[in-house]
Length: 294
Image 1: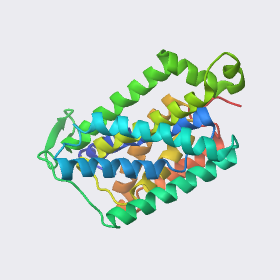
Image 2: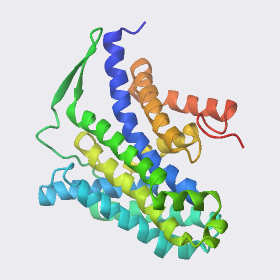
Image 3: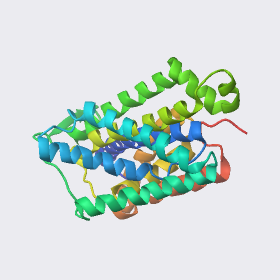
Image 4: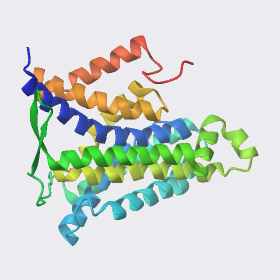
C-alpha cells in the first residue's frame, strides 16, 4: 500500500497540473459550446502562446507572469481574427468545413513554428523556477514547486473569471443564446458572427493565460500542444460537452488520476488511467459526469 507521505505530494502535484488542464479545456469547451465543433487548432494555438511567452522572456526580459497582460489580449486578437477572417469565410457555415479548416490551421501553425524555432525543446530560467513551498496538513507534508502553486491559483482565478463572464455579463448571455439556438438569437438582433468570433477569441485567451502559468515549470517545442490538447479533449468529454463546471472539475480529477497513475505505474504509463477513465465514461455515462442527458 502506498504511504500517505508519498501519496499526498502526488495528489498535490496532480491538482496543480489539473488546474492548468482545466483552463485549457475550458477554452475548448467554450468553443464547442457555441460553435458545436471541436477546434483541432487548439493545441497548436497553445504552442504559439508558449512561444510568445518564451520570446518575451528571452528577447525582452519580461517575466512569464508579467507577460499575462500582453499574451492574453494577443491570443484573444488572434482567435477573433482567425474566426472572423479565416474560419468563418472558408467554412461557408458548414461544420465539416470548420473541422477541416481548424485542422489545416493546426498544420500551418506547427510548420511555421518548425520553420522559425526548429524542433529544439526550449525552457526559460527564472529566479523562482527551483523555489519550493512546504505544505503541511499534520498527517502528511510535501514540498511543491512555487511555479506550480502559482499556476494552480492563477488557473483557478482565470477559470472563475471565464465562468463569471459567461454567466453574468451581456456578452455571456449572448454566447449562451447563440449556443442554444443561433437562428432565434439572430432574430433577436444578436450578431451571431461576432459572438462566434468572441467565443473563439476568449477560448484562445484562456490558452494565453495557461501558457504564462505553464512555462516557468515546463518547456516548449513545436509539438508541445498535442499532448495537452489530447488531455483537454478527454476532460471536455469527461466533464460533459459544453459544461464549464464539468471541465473545471474534470481537469482537476484528470490531473490527480495522471499523477497517481505515474506514481503507481511509472511516469511513462501515467496517462493510462486517464484513458481508462475516458473509456469508462463513454461506456457508462456518455453525456459526461456533469452533462445533461439528451
